[in-house]
Image 1 (cartoon, one colour):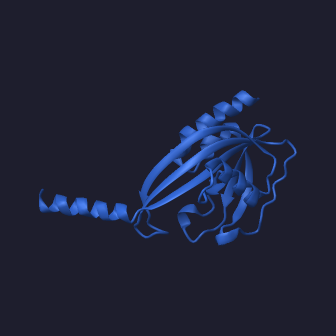
Image 2 (image 1 turned 120 degrees about the vertical axis):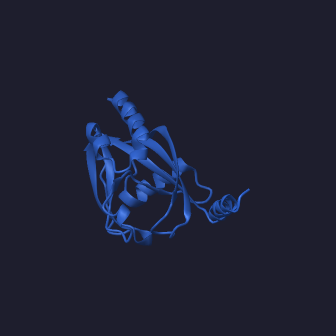
Image 3 (image 1 turned 45 degrees about the vertical axis):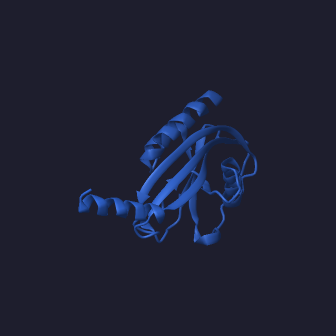
Length: 170
């Protein structure tokens, strides 16, 4: 092996050893034909500031992904009356972080689920969440606008599957 290839391979191995793995769960929540989107507040990492996304959070040790999303929805939004409809799939992404972990390789595994809320469910939006995260706002987005409003292109397949299932509920 030439010196440059060997150096390249050693750098990859070093990066993989230092890799950070993050596992999260998120939910597409439907209520009367609209989907719940949560807007993050201002964050020290500009790339996630004010973005709309689906509610969810990090999976705790020993916790099942579906349990994580139920816990997070209760903690962040006060929703207790949510009914599981389906597992939508997962997204497995790798990237070199520029902001939080300063160049570290990140392996992020995101589980998605579809839930439905009771028609009379009320959201309780907290001022702040542990760890400094804040929710700036929420929006009940008409299902037919969801793809256009998505901030993340890698979620399109998950969103399409969720929308197909939502349309079968009507």
